[in-house]
Length: 475
Image (cartoon, rainbow, N blue to C red; front, side, top):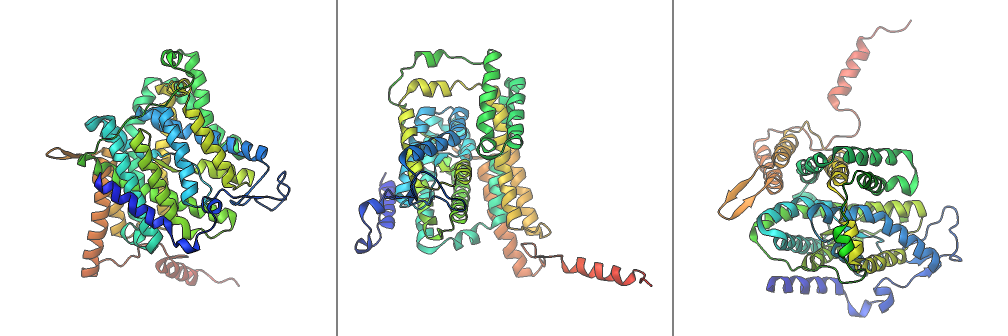
């Protein structure tokens, strides 16, 4: 507990800044908004900036859209992992408000349940139960907040040196692909329902434009749920016994050294998601938000720590809500305050929480097939965006070994400590990359660059020139 006290103290000091330069309290909390124009419309080519808002009725409407956008994904995590949905929703709303305060209202974002926590939570529950899993969530949040404090102070360059794209991509990919057996188990429980759920998700994503197309997972879950009802796969016994109003179910964490290897790799995913979110918002609003990247990481870390202490799932910034902003052109953080407050209010209905918990395995199997695959492909996306060169044997070996260890879920037991595929795969990616790079540099044996160069490779250009010279000339 002493270490946690030190962590919170460091976080507070990192956020305080110079007292003489502090803005008024309202601005400091990011809750002082200017009215955008008349507050009733948005002119063509304009957007509602984070420090602006529309009239309150319109702002509340946009905030409700953010609740709908986060709904499906946020609830799938606790349902899959067996955590209380209402508790997760409560800390999702509180985490969102905390994020807005720590970033001073400069980064519009909703913090929902992170899929990256599914695998470590499920694995740690088998060894240490739900309290042990919550302890892992707290530790991951503390590490993320510490990383954020360092980034805020020194920048993010050291992260790129320690975890270049080949390593980060491999770890993100193996976390998603490690969950494939869990998706199959739920899928096999009700194949017809699962197929309809998955097919709906796929079709909605290409049939509809705008916000509906971006909510394909939520629509798929709703359609799959209706199918499950018709097939008699849904039980409402717990929901009928639950009260309409009441407190969510809270649970305290327990701390075990054995969960470190499971949860620390998740931090890499959260770092990538948060920094990517900040960059996306900066590009859409035309503002430079590099100066708050560290604060975003600290905020998500603090929200995850809080959730772990109360019985909720770890949080992350949501791409689904970026879709709402892109569709509405409203980037006002006022809308996110509305979304966070509404989420908190919903969490105080046990009957609502039990209704969400009635989602049957078939629906989860269909949705998880898509979701877990998306996590894996996110790792591949990191490779593609950073033009990782797989002709380089260091890159090729790093990805190949790490992925197989993670997908096959290799295990290594030392006394009471048990390291599974995610921990071993992540460690393998770091050790293999830095070890091979050091040896290759000492021996001078790797000539291929780590990233692909712009244009064609010299060898390809030379081959094309030679072919052009051999071709008969036109007369």
